[in-house]
Image (cartoon, rainbow, N blue to C red; front, side):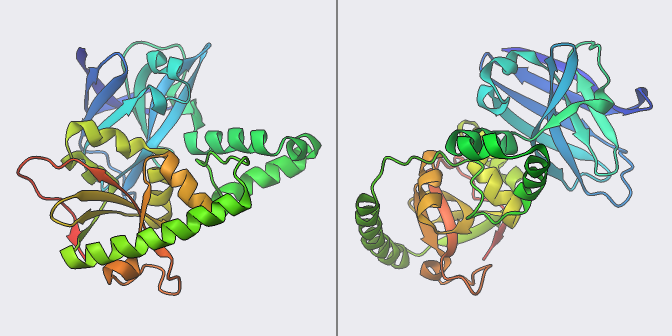
Length: 313
């Protein structure tokens, strides 16, 4: 494993303006941890920054979005874990040459592992969620993508982030080989299983703790990769929270959402096979008019001797 430290600078007008901190890098062959420390950012009303990995792409630079870092004014202390799966293509992991924090008003803070020949203020910024969605869509709807004109394609791409979760599946790996009858049988079986599990949860009691994405750092290190899970990110940026659900025996990590058959397939594909409705937990739903609102869950390991952080509900 390689360990090194690089200074964090604010950039402006094509040059370094001032030093605002440092980044400690722990780089393995297939994963990496960044410890980001900065102060005196002077962000005024801004309270969050978008975090990007900087990669070389031919002679230019590309910024791959990894999430939003919140509560950063006036200082930032943040730990991020990423793997080859978080760099668009696995081979780009070896091209990571720095990281950047970008504000909504154009402020740029960056740390570079080495000297680069491009301007970090004008990176080509990429959101992996939308890249994955476009790739899936092009595979599922080849005829429509071939017949759509340039103006229609641009208009459609602008609409994509505003669609509702059940309509947009930026992470879903949809397959058409399943028959309607088979899907109905699975749904009936799932419904019966959910009733049984709901009774078991009611008997044991479930302690629900609302958390933020950065609170995943309180879990053992082997669980940190979940902070960049595409399904988790989609739910988090739609509902602005996650959930720890603790029944005393198992600790579950929950991603908020509304139950739907297609969503269930996508959730399972990304490691969240269990859906727990708020009504089964006797919780007040964030979507009071929707009885199918709840959490897509997976069991996670506990930090020995620790309790989940966040706010109990």
